[in-house]
Structures are given as C-alpha cells and as structure tokens.
Image 1 (cartoon, rainbow, N blue to C red):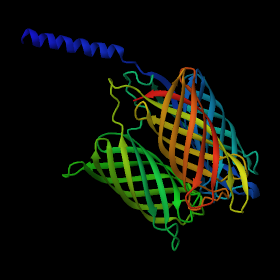
Image 2 (cartoon, one colour; image 1 turned 30 degrees about the vertical axis):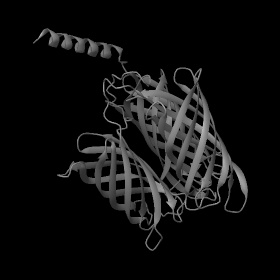
Image 3 (cartoon, rainbow, N blue to C red; image 1 turned 90 degrees about the vertical axis):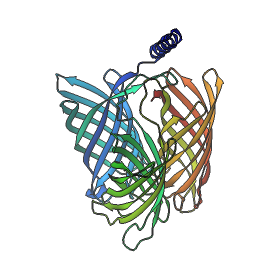
Length: 474
C-alpha cells in the first residue's frame, strides 16, 4: 500500500471513530403492551364485552402512561369505541407478583349506546402474576360515562407484555437497536370500497392507515385503522392488527402475497354485531420510486360476533418506507400528543351545538420543515358521544427563536356518528398553530382551523389545545 493510501485509510478510520463517538446511545425506557377484556353491563341488563389495548411507557419509577383504545367485542354494540390516555402506578412484590392501580380518561361512543356526551372514565385495580417477559392477571374496574347512563362494575382479564422503548434527541446520530413494538418501518394510506355492508345493502367507501413493522424479508406485522367516507355508513370505524407475507417476483420491485387482519369494527349502522371483524386478502406491492410503493389489495371482510357484514372489498394504497434503524443515522423527531378540540357542529335535527373532542396525535418529521401526522378524536361533551374523527395529512413548521415555532397542517379523513351532519363521512381540516417548548421534550401547542364535510352540512371554525412529547426515533 502506498503512503497516500495509508493516509486515506487512517483518515477514514479517524472519521468513523469520531462519528461513532458523537453518536448518541439511545435512552431505553421500560414499557408494556397491555391487552384486556371484561364483560360490562349496560342499562336494561344488556351485557357487552369490552376489549382494551394500550401502550404504556414508564416515565418515573413505578409510574407509566400512554395511549389506550377501548372497543366493543361481544354483544350488540359493535362500533362503540373510545380512545384516550391511561396512567398507572405499578408495585412489584417478590419476583413474580405485580399490583396496578390506574385511571383511563377518553372519549367516544357509538352503536347507539347511552354514552351521553362521550366522556369515559375507567378507574381500576389489577393483580398479575409474571412470567418471562409477560404477565397475566385479573382486573377489577368501574366503567363510567359521567354524562351518559352507563355505570358498571366488573372483573376482567388483563395481559401485559414487556417492551423496551428506545428514544434519543432529534437530529443526533442514533446508536440504538430499536426492537420496540412501536418501531414503524412503513406507513400505508389506502382508499377502497366494501362491495356491500350486508346482503343487498349499498357499497361503502373507506379509507385506511396502516403502520407496518418488518419481521423479516417476508413477514410483516401491522396495526391499522379505517373509517367510512362514502355511502350511508358515516360513523363506521375499524381498528385491528394483522400479519402479511410478501414474496419477490421476476418483475423488478414487485412482490406478491397475502395478508390477514383481526380487529373490531362497527358504527354507521354497519351490521357488525358484537364488533369482532376479520379480513383476508391477496396483496401485490410495487416499489415505484425510492421509499414509495403502490399496492393493490382484494379480499373479504367478515363480522364474527353475530353481525351480517360479509363483503368483498378492494383497496388501492400508497406506502412510504422509513428503513431499518441505522447506527449512524440521525434520530428523527416523532411527537406523541394528547389534544382537545372545540367547535359548533351542525346536527341532523337542524340544530347547531358546541361539542368538545379529545384525541391522540402522532407526527413524524420528514425533514426539518415537513412532517406527516395521523390523528383521532372522540366527542366528550355536547350530547354527541358516538361522534368520532380520524385524520391524516401533511404539516410544515417554522422556528421563531426561543423555543417558539409556528406551523400549518392540511388534513383529510372521516367523521361521523353522534347525530352530527357529516353525510358520507369525508371531511377536510386545514389548521394553523403556534407552539413552544416546555422542558427538554414537552411541546405545548395552540391551534385554529376549520372542519368541513365534503357532502354534509358540517362546517365550523375550531380551536385546539394539545400537549405533546417529542422524542428522537430512528
């Protein structure tokens, strides 16, 4: 090797060492994926099975919090959903036993359940026995809709799976492995149609957002949400988890396979019975340019818990991959936020009344200026408890100095239920906002915008207040 070659080799090694030294070791925080089921009692002696899913991060020793979703799974109230935030205190006794005290606060409703304005409270106490990486136990809880008629006390089952949530500082080189359940390798936004809600019924136009987690070169795990935007099913929503398999073909960039999903769905008079639904489909994905892909999906959706929903469906989707974690890549800002909105909403009875919603927002930076966001809201006041909103869109922000920034968002999605006049379900929501940093990771934001139904009479200015936590993610 020449002296010049040795010089270049030494310089490259020194640069690599400096890069590794400056890379931030990820902060690892204990977390847990929580699933539960309980049988609640509604007025008149009616019973409803309620399923729960939550992801909780330990922000202080023994204290954890995070987003949570509840939905009807058995009975006749398929389509009843609420989403919000869960906070818990955890005590450990010996090597195996765990005791938990917690409170969930959220909003939503659906399926003509007597939820009033939609605010839901669920205080609970759990006792679990731990195994290697997971724990199983019983939960004693009270389910309350303070401005509705549902008040129920019950026992249930709860499953807790341990996780490690990795995060760092946005923009600083990443040195974590990020094996967390929350790792998102791809987002897929789609639109399509259910051929009929039930035998002889009209077709239903739907949109969906799917977050995917690669399990290997073939298998893909996913979580997804969907809602009606066309037809007579405004207010219909679905949430689920799925598994897909895709294999390469001789055509460059084309992979084919199939996927299946199991979850909860209902609302908008779509007959899902107790609420458990499933999908099975053939899938073709074509990598069209860089991280972007186009996919076509066709299959069948079916209600398993007493409903008549049994339909062929087709969907066309656009996907964006984010790639696997890279030890030398900068951590990208991802913000998780709890938000509240207020506006006067037109009702189907001709009146116009104020309602408030609470919601969850997730935003991921594309670069220093642009970000993508997904948001979900449920009513908590205004007598519109079944009203829910799901939005996806693009945002931009500009720093103003001193930790302040301003921004704007262009959002579109679906809304319906609760007697709100959003015929068909499709809505748009432009918004501007001003925000400030609070501490190292906190974000406080005040926004103003406009929500408008594309086919219904819903059209109103809105205000929004949100509190978020911004973390560096791969």
